[in-house]
Image (cartoon, rainbow, N blue to C red; front, side, top):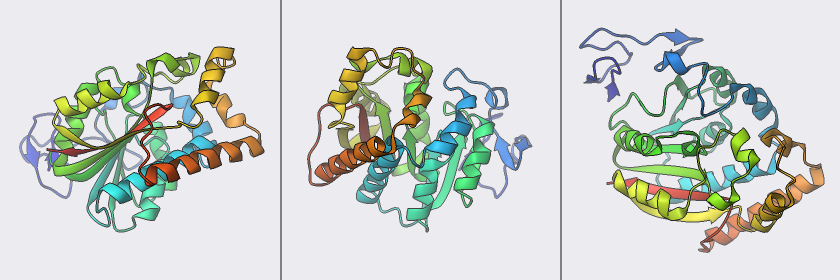
Length: 288
């Protein structure tokens, strides 16, 4: 069901005009705007990063490998050959495009607080239904079979509220797919540049998911084999004054080696290995 964010009425309709109060959200470039005050600015991210992300995500080892982890988890823990899927915080649509291509029968939705990102996402995932919204006020109730949020929660102060909204937007037994940065002791200047509010511990994330009504199906660290390199990077101070955008400037040979290491790590996880430590964590949880 759709949810009118003005009067709170729940309704089924092909359009967004609320049958109770008559409110219809505005549109920008064909995208509905549900949080107009935040469409150009939010403390959780810097919209000027989007053009560079759009240019380099498809070749950077971390984004490429993370997509492989995400697609494996979706195909392994849900029957998503059809149904409704929403990605919250879809950014430039890099993950959304991979899901759209790999699961062609799935009806794809993507939300993003910054309207500037949606034009990039539309180029990548042309069949997706895209809209601007605040993750703290998702305009759906019991609507989606599955929902993804990939490196989104750490940007939002009230992450429990967002998890509760995701729980509400899912149907009963719906599946949530999450990735987050892990280990507070890995905090660096890069987290500050990226507008992170936190890095998670496994227990903190698990407790928050359980508290809002999720049952955890899978939880594992990833970027685990590269963790010594991350620790060295932090201890050596090489990341102290560097923007996260500089991580795209790796030599081609190094970028490829790092991608192969993460691909091997995924292979181990597919065979049942669960890493306790790693730069990121992947969680699959079911709404109960």
